[in-house]
Amino acid sequence: MQLSAQEIYEKLVVEHSIIGEKGIISFILNGHDIKIKSKDSVGNLLQEWLRDWLISKGVVFGTMIGTQDFPDFQLDVTDPRKGMLEVKSFDYDNSPNFDVAAFLAYRRSLLVHPYRLDSDYLIIGYSMVGHHIEIKDVWLKKVWEITGPSNDWPLKCQVKQGEIFNIRPTKWYLRTGKKDRGPKLPVFKSALEFVTAFDATQRQWTATAREAQTSTWLTKVISGYKAATGKDLI
Image (tube, rainbow, N blue to C red; front, side, top):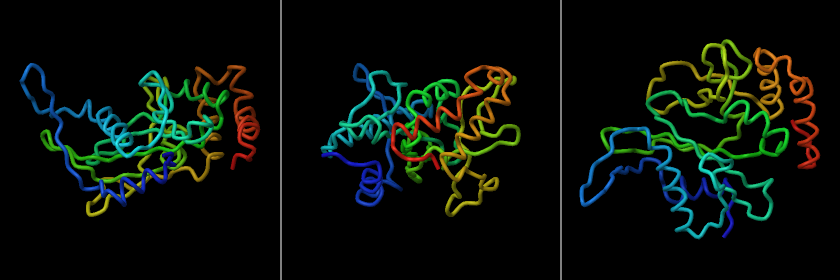
C-alpha cells in the first residue's frame, strides 16, 4: 500500500505509540555480542529500523541508490515530484544539530528540482543512557518549519572560518516536562521566506556573492517551482 508522510507519522505516533518506546543497540560478530553506547550510529540505525518497519507494514516506497542521496524515502512511486521523505534524528537532551542539507548541493538541487521544497522531514528525538535508547518525540515538518536565521546569517548554517558547509536546524520546539536551556528560536513562516533567506545568505557569503548564478538563483527557483508544480511559491 502507498501511504503519505502524514499517514506514516500517524501510524507511528498514534497507532503504534512509538513515543516512549525503548530499544537496545547491539552488535554480534563471531558469537560475541556487544552493547553499543556511542551515539554516532544512532541516526543510521533509526533510518534502517524505519525502512524495515515500513516493509513489515506493507508500505510501498522507493529509495535512492546512495545512502547520502535525496530523498531517504520516495513514498509516491509514480511521481518523483511528490512523496519525498527525509529522516533526521538527534539527541533530545541537546539542541538539534543534524545537517538539513549541504548548502551548495542544496543550492544546485533547487535549480533542477525546485519541488524539493515540498519534502517532508520525519524527525526523531531520542535519549540515550548507556546502550538504551528511548524515543522522546517525533515530528513531521517542512524544511522552513525547522530552519531559521542565526545571529550572523539570514539562514542558520554550519560555518567554519567563514565557510558555509551545511544548513542547520533551529530549535523549533519546547520540551515538555523539562526546562529548556534557551528560548525557542524563530522559524520561517513559509517556503518563500526560507528560499529568500537562503538567497540572502549566498549573497552575504564571499564564496558565492559575486557568482553569476547567485544573481538569478532566487528568480529561477520561484519560476521553476511554478512550472514544476503549477503552484505559486508562497
